[in-house]
Length: 272
Image (cartoon, rainbow, N blue to C red; front, side, top):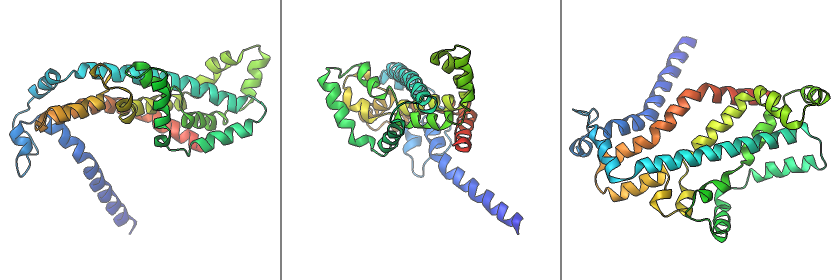
């Protein structure tokens, strides 16, 4: 009986995997088809000949290299600052003793329940008042830190025995030395997880860049893709190729670091 249940479970898993992966795989294949193949009925699944020229046409019609540079730069800066601020805040909440610490943690938890959409226009108004629209600064400033990742690292770091911090202070180490030499190496899985997920989130951002930028030189990949889909009209094969360009790099990053992400989340769950 158990064997039958296992077989059914594997079959169900295979079906779900196929349903999940098919749109992504078809997007890649459609980006290598001709216009006739993409629009044919019934649809063509495997292209007769791979049309690598589609990607050349995409770069010729839109400055995707510029979009790629913008996205990498903004994502890297956002990730760097988020990791630094989250580690420092997580250390303060887990290791330091200060007045009203419980209240601060309670406020952080309550702020986690505030939807991002409810504050986005407040952020936009602030950026506009500062005269920072159409700039890299506008794309980066609102994401210099993350309450979610601060609380995530707090939950991870509080599982590290306080004796490490006390021993470091007895040896004369400053707080920054303790963080860099002891805390960061011990919490590497969680920090890597924060960095990767922050990078992925920033890479996939769409609404905020759309609000604060309206010039091509500041567009990110997803905004550039949306504009290209409008400008390219009925060239579905080129749209698929452009969509593949935006997805493949971040997919590679996820596949390379997936073990670190799983390890960081699993350890946090055990310790928390």
